[in-house]
Length: 491
Image 1 (tube, rainbow, N blue to C red):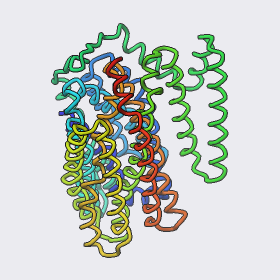
Image 2 (cartoon, helix red, strand yellow):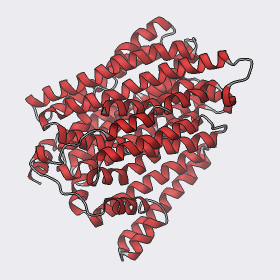
Image 3 (spheres, rainbow, N blue to C red):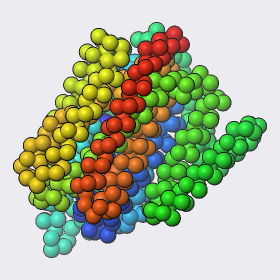
Image 4 (spheres, rainbow, N blue to C red):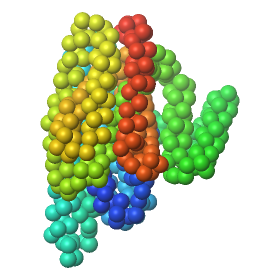
């Protein structure tokens, strides 16, 4: 059931990829704006809302939280169908991101209580297979609906006056309400029992989470620090706000795209506010999340994987449509089935192999992740450069298989590096970095480079350089992993 929820999570998120060419033509958008809609507009609010929702996942019913979030993002996906401008579609994407933020922290916490440590990478890999099932479903469904709808109503008379890409959003979002009811029928495992550290429920979880959300937003964050008498923290908070505002202004003046840099600055400011609040209210949680070197370097390494992964996975459908031709239905079916089958299989196999390697070496999951980071780049280079459509699709098959083998290892490493009662918060921080770097920058940077080069090909090739940084970060994490996991078990 959790895999199915994650499938819809990524179906609603990824649908924009196969519809990008039609949206670009109808709304008059450029590649940077398309990258912003898919990545930044969604990703920043996905990351920011993950923090208060993670607190709820640690303190209240995970099934109720997941069902409510599912209803929100499904409704926002349906609302995308009625967007007639860049601003309208951006607003809908913001709500999709806010709703989807609650699914993963709750699921990671849930699965860590359902499976013992030795099997967690496999379990989380199976859960993360929902990503590629959802990506595949989005490409197949979106391509099929947009072509059939526009062909059926080429002469006008479409219901509600919707174009094919708008209808696709309705078809994708509507089933979420039924799935939310099914989620409410699930039973949750007890927290922390498998790790010998049963957790006690919080007295006022909703009040605490609402306070945490407000504390992330200006000017409430600074006001809270002032009322608490936290003078040095307030000075640091205001200085950071000024620095981020200045950076956003400078980047906008230099590169344009004001929404991109304003959203990114707000996302970074919210993360700093969350960290400050966590330090004041829960010193042990702050220490677990921010003073565990292996966790910091692990999160940065997998975030670089995410930069390459989200960037390429979003732009591959537009790339095939532009370079190799064919309609959305054909391209969507081919890429979608490869992602759903081989992508999902690769995630599960990667989790199983990472667990096997870890059984022989405590750092095995990181060694495995470094090893598989090389494979996608080696396959992607000829895939991007060839002019032969048949060869390009043939190369996409092994690319889909290996591109996300790291996912199970990443989530399992994070949950093993913190005590059970801090897992959802650590997961939210980990997913924040993956989101801000992967989604907040990956698709936009590739779109911006595509405009600069006048060609999508070199932009996709440059994205592969992120894997070098990923390997260096994971190697650094491996140096303290054993010590840091021992500290988490002792705590």
